[in-house]
Amino acid sequence: MKIETIAIHVGTQTDPSTGAVVQPLVQSTTFERKEDGSFTNGFIYSRSSNPNRTALEKVLAELEQGVEAAAFSSGNAAGMAVFQSLEPGTHIIAPDDMYHGLRNQLKTLFAGILEFDFIDINNEQILNAHIKPNTGLIWIETPSNPLLKITDIKKITDIAKTKGIKVVCDNTFATPVCQQPLLLGADIVMHSSTKYFSGHSDLMGGVLITTKNNDWWGKIRAIQEMGGAIPSPFDCYMLVRSVKTLPYRMRGHIHNAQLLTEFLSVHPKVEQVLYPGLPSHTGHDIAKQQMQEFGGMLSFCIKGGEAEARRVINGLKLFTRATSLGGVESLIEHRATMEGPDTKTPFNLLRVSAGLEHIDDLIEDLRQALD
Ligand SMILES: *Cc1c(COP(=O)(O)O)cnc(C)c1O
Image (tube, rainbow, N blue to C red):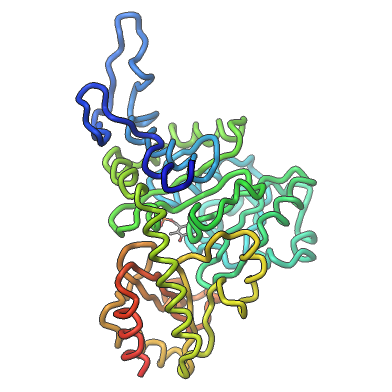
């Protein structure tokens, strides 16, 4: 099946007890045992599994062409389950522009438990120099946030495989519509479902999707079940609903991002536009090989520094000044402020999540704010 069909049909079916076309919301925390002690459909207690979560996990696994998915209450909870699954003393290699929330998680919660290096992962020499006997995981995030840097997934997984190192790829920015890291050799794909999967800026979630149901995955499942950082049945229901339109929403996000990029690239007040679809982008050639589409996120740098960047975002009427991404409404953010003092993000950079408004209205708003 193609991705549009998977998004709509996998995981859910017409409810056999009522004929409801849409799978009902099951809020029950507990499920009745039969007289012989067994359970109807295997559901026991909703921290372990719940019909709405199972439906969500099935569709997300198939969208990424994995074998199983584990849904969490946020992207950070999904990331944390990966780190918790590693033996103490394991060394992790992560990009120096890793999503700041997960970088901070490693630095504050896992200091003294795991070892980690944040490096320029796209430089093969630097990468090889950092691989140690106890390196157990390479974390990649591509396109990265907010510089939209591109990491060659196949190249990294090839290097990792020769050394028995696992690779997890944060695919939040790309979504499976644009890129499927498991097909390029990654062991696990991670998403913040809060973003494009939800698509409406109204729920938090995270997910891990695996290529293999192995011991490592078993441990991650145990962390999900015992740690309990699970999404509510309602959030799972909402996500199943949202994911049905993911491929079509992505077309709109991608279309608008591309046209915004074209407008900004020739604007005299714009110093630089960062978008993997631009031939001028440093990662464009790799992006062309590993991505079907270039996504809905872009960043641009304003001439005149931070003050001018602030003047521009404060002059916008349609774009909302807010963090996060992937919703129907266009968002813009002065990213350095959000990331705090240790940020490497330029202070004249604005990050845009292209929404689904009409492109003419978005361009008009940017034009008036820039002028
Ligand atoms: C938002 C985000 C996360 C964290 O997800 P939450 O749902 O906010 O916990 C991780 N990685 C990327 C790339 C993100 O954009």
